[in-house]
Image 1 (tube, rainbow, N blue to C red):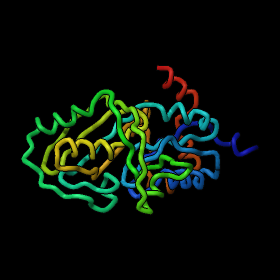
Image 2 (cartoon, rainbow, N blue to C red; image 1 turned 30 degrees about the vertical axis):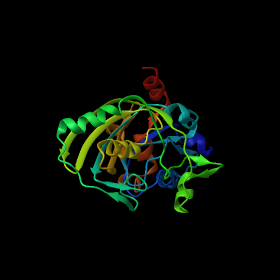
Image 3 (spheres, helix red, strand yellow; image 1 turned 90 degrees about the vertical axis):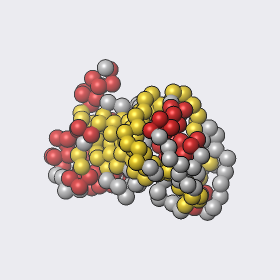
Image 4 (cartoon, rainbow, N blue to C red; image 1 turned 180 degrees about the vertical axis):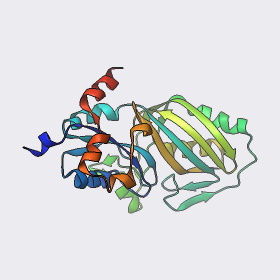
Length: 241
């Protein structure tokens, strides 16, 4: 019996740990399943946690469709500090005093970045310029012009304002950079900001309720992983709703 026939096709939702890449999760799953035809639906920055969708077997054909779905993130930003990567993973570029903003001031800034608008992708990103990922250029200290991208924020909520930190949730379209969202809100407020925490809680119809934790995936048997997978027939039903 072939490798593909032995493994049912479907989606495995993984709750990604911090300090890991999407490729790390694919490699772990390939090792545990002893199966190579596995891909992932979009990347998460190493510092981010939460929903990572792995497509297995024939489900790899659904990769583009699944990646087009909207996303929900929980995030935290820190006002007063701007960084090169727009998150906590790089050096500080600028430090400014943070005024005594009210919750209304913060909400007003968030409201400006709702609905349809454009984002300029960060230099530290996987977008390619002449075949070279921008993050590789950024490592060499090279900055190039990036074209604005149309994005949409369907909804947002500010959960906590404890200056200089702000906790929020954002429901957004594919290709949205939450790092840039935090950066732009900081620029609008005049003091700068960067992202200090990020967790994806939903991607399309897939959320953390069906996810396997990274620590469990590392030691799971083939049978346990197959049991956690969402099979093709259920995926078809989910996408038709």
